[in-house]
Image (cartoon, rainbow, N blue to C red; front, side, top):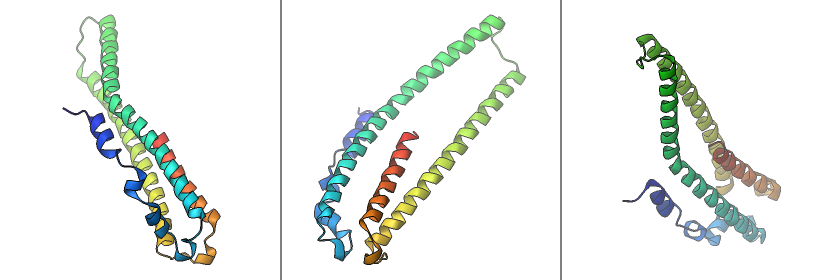
Length: 173
């Protein structure tokens, strides 16, 4: 039986850059006026190197995330032991009153709701960043940006923005 980690790593990380986009396909993403520019090869190489780095980071994060359930279980067990020790020391009767249970559940509910709210906000922010970058890339791809106004600095800044968004989403985990 395959583990979650082996499934994720073997099926999602086996393709190389050339399997997803060739230099020729990458070149076609630029306006006609820029397709013969020799810097496209440099951009492709940098893109390839960034993709390798991102794949390494995603692989590392995948392995860490797959190990988290074990860490959570260990943490839950230790918390349970601590609670048991505390209740035994305080009172021989290890049962909680209804009021205590309601209080504990209320605190946990608030904590979980705060965490859910934070996650929703973070997801919305990341989705907005990705949509904005996608829109900018679509404008570039379909020629909505005039060739005269498109400078190398703008392309590099756009790609840096995409890398920053991807890096910030992986570091916030």
